[in-house]
Length: 143
Image 1 (spheres, one colour):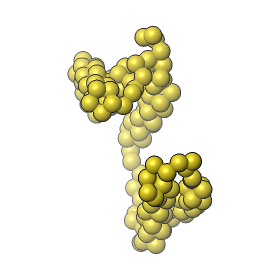
Image 2: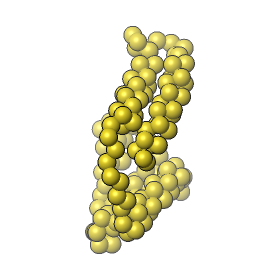
Image 3: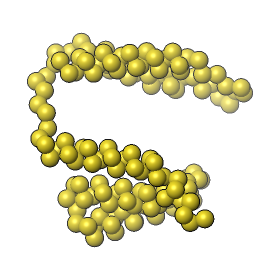
Image 4: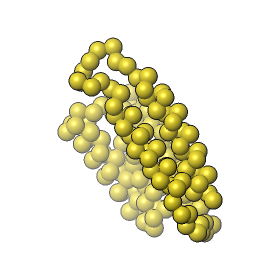
């Protein structure tokens, strides 16, 4: 039953998104088809998947154990804090902290999680900034 409730809500959200996406217009044409096809295509695929989910025979739902739900809640809180503190902390530090928290949730020791987080934060910042030319914030606390 929860599959059908989710699919019904998702269908309504996709239809609303299609209405919004259809109104996307660009002041100038930087592509032959404009900016509209990508969001419309993604939303149409999501709508198709939601309809298929609604029509299929539902599986027996078995909810995860309490510890799994606690870890999922910690992940959601960590991702929310990551989004909230991204500009102030900066990409390298915020990514290092998020990676360390996720590493510890998956069984890493504190030193290993901190080292892996620091390496990932710095490496990803370098890759985005230098190799891909994507400007990411270093953090308000640095300057």
